[in-house]
Length: 464
Image 1 (cartoon, rainbow, N blue to C red):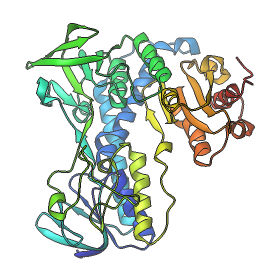
Image 2 (cartoon, helix red, strand yellow; image 1 turned 90 degrees about the horizontal axis):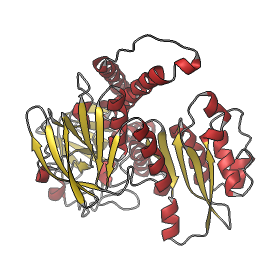
Image 3 (cartoon, helix red, strand yellow; image 1 turned 30 degrees about the vertical axis):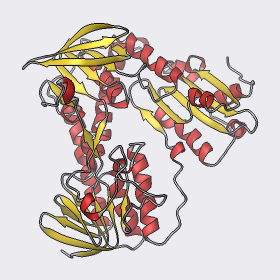
Image 4 (cartoon, rainbow, N blue to C red; image 1 turned 120 degrees about the horizontal axis):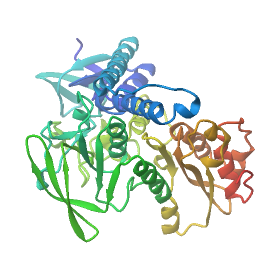
């Protein structure tokens, strides 16, 4: 194996492997250092297997609750969580192998081992040193974390992370989830569908606290109808971890209560993988939050060292990291890529109904004292949603009153993760709500709700 490359990327997740492919496309001799499996957290213990489990959960709920109304009669439904996990692992393995195939296809060298940065654009991997002529790219991502200060350190049996949750052989009888962000709400959906009594505990005032308040309220109502308990504005004060259960003392609303569960799933944030990388020795600076400090070109404080993905700072999303990967590849190849519009990176929570958003929330528009108008359209008024018996949720578009600019968009409902991209493209290209509505939307489709919400923001809604 050669010791010198044009580019060396430390980390083979969505940021790193996409960067490597784009580098190779641009004629750069590229190596990827990966200590575990190609595809990183997303492919192996994150985005991909969790979405497979969510698909199983949605199918289970559909069969149990909706089959009869569609003229389909079934007998007793038996749930097999272990089988659902096996399916998710098969999907994950297939995707990881797919990344390996792409590395070979693009003639990218993969070095398996733990990488540490060295001065002079070098990377040491398990005692062997490799050098880069153009740049070293850090793409080591993040990992799950517990709350050891209140007794909730991950022991992988009764206190688990999303990593362990993806390998359980059975759904626990009762589950407490710490954190009502995207990860927490998705696992609440999964385990509820497979029979767990689920309690979600969130320190901030509402579930999905980074989303628009209307979206948060809608998803909370929907999940509560499925008997999922959501304790918002609640703080875990202490925990007693026993071999078969965990007892939590919760402070909420000025009082205290006890929550006992067979298993606690930690979904309250992630830790940056910045240890043992050799950052300090090279002189690379970190932010106060532990992220690598980068400039507009994603170069670190040391020339020739770049950083992409979660470790470069929020939003910590796979698709954001992938775009950063292509951006840096083009910088290193001498191109001048279009700057990334971080305020136009879509956010998605894949529970059912899904939650997706882009741009500003209504609260942020008010805080910034913008002159705006809100348009809404409920899926209860959408023909395709009625036909599918999937009418929870709405489309909400916030427009600038003067120019019609789309300031933000929020969707709760079936296929929200797909529908949001119409508005992502619109904002990226500075289309107005009038131009969104001018595009003829096929009937009947869920996407008609997008056009109707645009019309509503103009005071011209048709179907409500």
